[in-house]
Each structure stands twice: as structure tokens, then as C-alpha cells.
Amino acid sequence: MTTVIWNFILLSAAIFVVAQLLPTIRIKNYVTALWVALVYSLINLAVGWLLVFLAFPLIIVTFGLFKFVINAFLLWMTDQVTEDFEIEGFTSTLLAAFLIAVLDSFLRWIL
Image 1: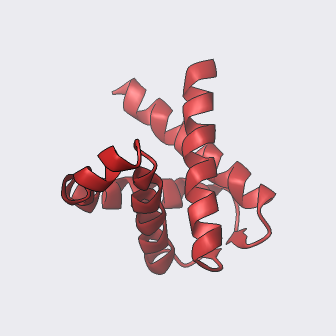
Image 2: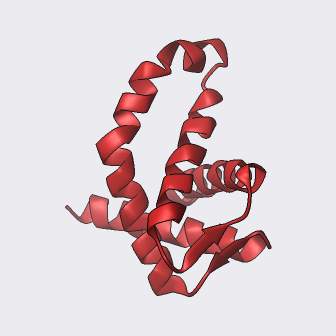
């Protein structure tokens, strides 16, 4: 159980840092980052597995890079249902999804 909470905190930290780095992402505060991490995780849990299953051939052909497109779509869905979190444009969403995934993995590796 503590691993789930720890991973949730690291994901929210990654979201908050990426939002501070990219000018096309607006987030109100760290509490909003916690909320975004929760909504993103729930959306990923609800439909992420289905998207990965349906796009599996594309994921294989692109050596896993298409997973970033799926993550960008899930992040866009999170943007649509969360009030104090905004991303401008698909390119920014794709870049944010990539940076969040890399930073989240890096934080998990360090800690």
C-alpha cells in the first residue's frame, strides 16, 4: 500500500515540475498536481489498458514509442476533466506526457 502512495506522490511531483518547466502548461499549485495525478491514474486504470491492447501492433512497430501518444491522449483527457490544469495544443501535450514519464521513471529509479 505504501508503494502505491509513494508512486502517486512521485507522479504528482513529476507533473508539477513539468508544469513549471513548460510555459504551455498551467497548473494552480501542488495540490492541483496531486489531483491531476489522481485523475490521470484513474483514467489510465479505466481506459489505458484498452488503448494499449488496441494499439499493441503500433507499439511493437514503433519499439514502444507509440505508448507516448497513448499517454498524451490520457493526459489530454485529464486536462479536459480537471479545472485548474490546462495544456495548450497537442504538441505540448505530447511533450508533457514524454517528460512526465521520463521524470517519473527517473524519480522512481533514484528513490
